[in-house]
Length: 404
Image (cartoon, rainbow, N blue to C red; front, side, top):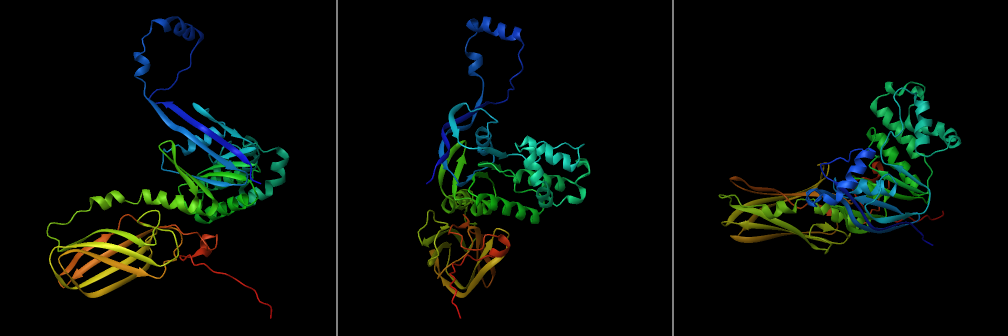
């Protein structure tokens, strides 16, 4: 039976902009107390305040892995600092039931003059690990970081990457009931990042509760069951990962560019907009099922065109060409024309993709458009959980084993 381990209600944090609170001596406190009745409220009213968080409420159940998404400055780190008891809230409260550990900053407690071995014990103690626990996990930590050859060397002689790997290795071997993680899986090289993500998956499967901040949506999709989308210090939406990650990616996919696209003065024709007609998703650019796909691209034709060549291609976020096709000998009448594309399925892994359409005639290029907003695939991931084995496609597959 599920149990609430994090209960947040009306949480808010306010900061004063452009002013740092100075330290006060006793005489300053006494002076303020005596002069307070004679001061007007004008000075206070001129102060500028910023609400980093405001009226945030949610619950997290035991064993859930919850993702926090949002743009830089949205309030994600502030929320984790309040939950970690590093920062006091201005309003509201949070109840947390269980032993808490936080991976908010890689390298907490490290000292450059101490050896790697000494820093493992120092950092572990700062993060809340007991000495016996550190001794028991020491070899595992060093092996995970891959720095066994240099462990008795002063940390100042480590490369930056080695320091980051060792710092994450210490933090990743904590055994709390509740773990807060803030954008720390991007340490080291690509191989070590995969190792970090695998470690976090291992932790998540052990039944511990995790609240995870990341700008990498593939990491959010792999680790999290539930997502909180924070925007401007408030919760904009919360819900299942597939649905919320698609909505978040769609919000930044250039819909303003679509509205601002104008026709060139001498253009024979120009593409104006595109949308998915079938299936009907949560947005005109969001594909959230494996069923047949019908997409529409709208073209404005200034004068009749003959022998037109039209192409459409699909790229992933890394600009790898995934699919493309072309049509020759088209006849287009003056006015608004709609190109309808029908595909039996588009089984791509969840994430953002780019469509590009072109139009040529015998005289050359007429229009070349990167469709905006992006195509966002929000189907349920059914591929292998490791990126290197998942490939590009997201094709459902069943397995049965039959004896000879």
